[in-house]
Length: 73
Image (cartoon, rainbow, N blue to C red):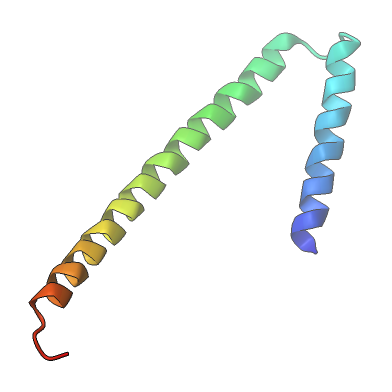
């Protein structure tokens, strides 16, 4: 429920910003700044996620190896 609220707020906010931009009430430089910030944050998040996924892959590979070596099934 909270997630839906946040999504509606984001949609509303971006809609208002879009209207302002279409009416030339905010400078393009402001949108460029927001895009830059979000792009950098996305890259940071992607890097962290990739690192964590690599750690999971190591555990999975290790467990797969252990499973293959087990002879008592």
